[in-house]
Length: 83
Image 1 (cartoon, rainbow, N blue to C red):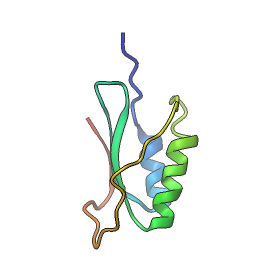
Image 2: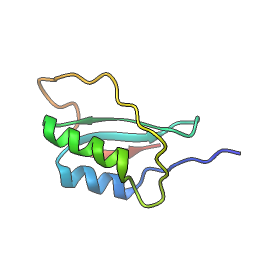
Image 3: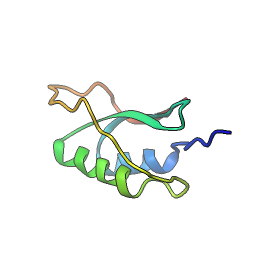
Image 4: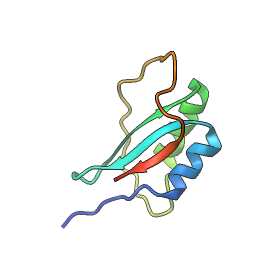
């Protein structure tokens, strides 16, 4: 049996409020992957929310952020949940 966290409107709404763009998606391993882009302070705020709050139905055991780098332009124009 697998339990999947389904990113939903809460994550999208929070990303929009914080002013970041990107996407989030469930994996078959029961984890969540995604990309977040924006000003460093806003990305850090989103990372904190993803690590400590998340959507009401989520259970956060740990977070792992990697491949962080400075970019010259955004690759996305909004924030979405991918399926």
